[in-house]
Length: 153
Image (cartoon, rainbow, N blue to C red; front, side, top):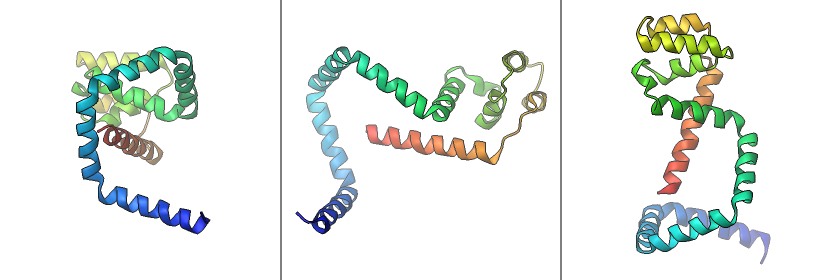
């Protein structure tokens, strides 16, 4: 098969997949529901038989995607720990989390938690500012997490 033909087929498959995305999604969902137990059992056995391989893969991924990994942990920590009760925006939380001085960070978070300072005062105390680069990083995180969540369904 010529390179031209291969390129044509690839392009055709991209268009077809995009045009029939909903139908394909529905078929995959039906197939999963029908074979759920088999699929879960397969994945469980795979994880058991490939622990070292998966551990190494995760370690490599974290090293290659360190900034994303750190941001991901901070965002999930923000929501899981209910810090959003003290913050009006995740941006302010992440601004304070940029602090490298852990004792200052803990002190600010404790004061916020007790209600002895307001969110704006916490930002001023931290001395940190939200930059365009931070915003780009957060936007990229949201895009990647949306892609991941949409590919799972």
